Amino acid sequence: MSGSLAQAAQTTEVESVTLPGGRVMVVASARVYVAPAYQPSIRNVEFLMGLRQKGLALPRVLFDQTGSARVLLCREGYPVFGTGRDTFSAMLERGLNTESSMAGLLNDRVPPLRATLDALVLEPGAQLGTQQWRLKLTLWPFEQAPVPVQHTHTFVASAFLPQGCNDAVAALTPALQESLWVLYGSAGLESAARP
Image (cartoon, rainbow, N blue to C red):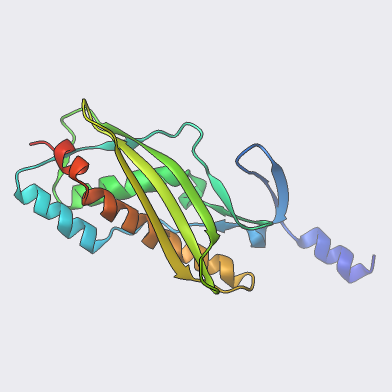
């Protein structure tokens, strides 16, 4: 190996990443993506303020973290972590509770509701030059039927690396915001929001 190649190999930082299913891969740190913090959606907060004006209040929502993914692959060899390398369900939990709090809808005086992130998948879109985040989540209100939500967020993405992964990470927050919008608009959420 030439001196410059050996030096480059020694200075390249690598990380060991455990994927869902237990597979471990070692990748260059430059190939690891971490999602930015969830940014509350003004549209979502305004919708929740409308529920508050109806006299409703929403208990804090806690997502079950059991088996929840911390990392997904953007492309083979390009892992994407949730915010702060936390689980993706923790991102949704923070987003939902932050938006509820901003709207004045959050009621901390009652036991929290349980929720699960049942699926989060990054996959190619139906059209050339697109990818999509596909989410399934379920809210489990007390003594009521579960409230399932499915949403697919399609976005323009480069076919080239690393830009394609940059595009996917940038589209994660809008995908989560839109999924929460679907949840907020469901009849099940309104019935779970009690005074």
